[in-house]
Each structure stands twice: as structure tokens, then as C-alpha cells.
Amino acid sequence: MCKKCFIVMIEAIRETLTNQRVGLGLAALGRPGYMTLTHATDLPDKTVEAMRSHAFDMLDFAWKKGIRYFDVARSYGKGEEFLAQWLKSRDISPKEVVIGSKWGYVYTANWQVDAEVHEIKYHTPENLARQWKESQELLGDYLSIYHIHSATIESGVLENTAVLDLLFEIQSTGTVVGLSLTGPKQHKTLEKALTIEQNGQLLFESVQATWNLLEQSVATQLDKARRQGCLIIIKEAMANGRIATLDPHFVTASEIATIQELSARYQLTPDQLAMNAALQQEFADIILSGAATESHLLSNLHRSNEQIDQNSIEMLAELPEAFWETRSTLSWV
Image (cartoon, rainbow, N blue to C red; front, side, top):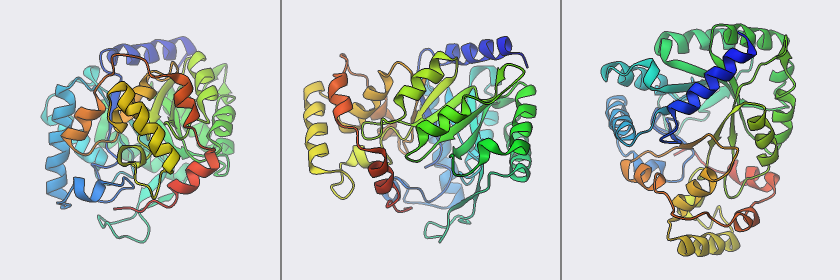
């Protein structure tokens, strides 16, 4: 597909999301275990049918609140299945909604919270071909964006010519191809990704990155990608619950004091402060809420009447190595 066509597609996606820049991620809704600090109490009934019913309720509530971007992945347990069933049962047209999914991890927990391994990364052409087919079978025409799940320099996925060729083939079908980023070298991964093109057409037109009050290291590269025309989606705005809960095991005393001071100054709860800080970043098109309950989502959607001081935001940033080291200690609950 030509470069001009993708520019039109990205702008059409932005137009769909004009009235509500918050999207809903199903990482915590599609499987019984996840790395959010409150997940165990948010979803007390972990049976498949109970979680399906709860996911439908959350999707209904999100739709009522104007959310039109929904984010899933092959490794989100039954996330794609739940979302596809909900879309069809509510008779929602593919033109009314934007759906992004991801390939690269295989869900291995077998619906167990205490599984030894919850997901395994396979950034291979064989896994891409299989998971693309699976995503298509479930989501069909609803699927607008397909991301590499947690691309890193170390995984070698951006140098795997067989994978890149398959992604260019997927792009040629009219699907926006993107990548999600992870780890302390997010910025280097994105810099590499933005050099990959074929016949003058960039491969990656959508970028999903971790940006929050504690992890801001990829901001410069996201701004560059946005100016090049990429759709920018922010994930983990709450740092897997660390900012929302201010648990002293995972947030320093200094960070807690600063977040509490800013929350009081702007009359926001910590989660609202985090969401509003992300929304005011000029490079951000969509901010994902990973809310697992209606009350959490409603809080995430609250808007401040004033801009949060950008210097105060930047002062909260940790060194990326420190942020990701702490994140690696979080348990699946």
C-alpha cells in the first residue's frame, strides 16, 4: 500500500478517536493473572465465564463513555475472543471502532494465576504467520493495527528479514503494522524501527510505548515518530499500578511525596494525575487505560481543568534501568 494511503488511514484513525483519546487495554480482562498490583482483588471470580461476563460489562461501560480504541494481544488469554464476541453481539461496525492487537508472545498459563510461566516470547516468522491467522479468524475486518509485542534490540526481531517480509505482506493488505516497546532501551529499539522501509514506505506506522511519570526515557523518540506520521499509543501510564497505589515497596518515599503534592495541587487522585500527565504530552495520540473495574476506568477518564507543570512531571522520571528493574520484581496476581 502506498505511503499516501497510510497517511490517510492514520488520520482516519485519529479522527475516529477525536472525542476520546483514552483507549481500553484488555491485558487485565482477558486472563486471570496479570502484573497489576490490585488485580487479585479487582477480579475475585477468575472462571472463564465470570471473566467473559465482566469483560463484556467493562466494554459496554467503556463504549458508553466514548472509548473507541481497544487493545488486545494473542497472549492476553481469551482477550481477542472476548473482544470479538462483544463487538459482534453489540452489532458494532468496523467503521465505528479501532482495534489493535499484538503478536509475539504465546499464552502458557492455562488459565492459572500461579502458573510458573505465563507467556513466552517467540519473535519468529512461524509464530507471526500462525498468530496473524488466529487474530484474523477472531477479529476479521475489525483488526486495524497489528503490533509486534514487546520488540527489543536484543530479540533480533528488527533484523529478522523473514519476519520483516511477512510484516510488509500484512501491511499490503491494508493493516497498519506497528510495534510495542519494552525495557530500558525502548528509545534505541524505536530508533532502529524508524529506519526500516521498503520502496520509500516505513514498515512501522504505529508505536505503542511505555511512558509514565516514572519512565519518560523514550519521549524524544516518540516525538520524532509522531512528526514522521506514526500513531503513538501510550501504555502502562499507571506503571502496573505502582502510581495508582503508591505502594512503598515499589515507589520511593520521595516519589510518593511528590505525587501526593501534585495530586493535591491539581485536585486529582494519583491515577488521574498519571493519566492527565500522559494526555498532555504532544506526541501522544492514545493513552491506554488498563482498568479492570468500572470505578477505576471512570477515575482514569477524569480530566483536570489545568495543565500539569511539565517541569514537575519531568522531575519524577527515574533512570530507565531502575524503573525496569523494579518492574521485573512485580508478581502475576
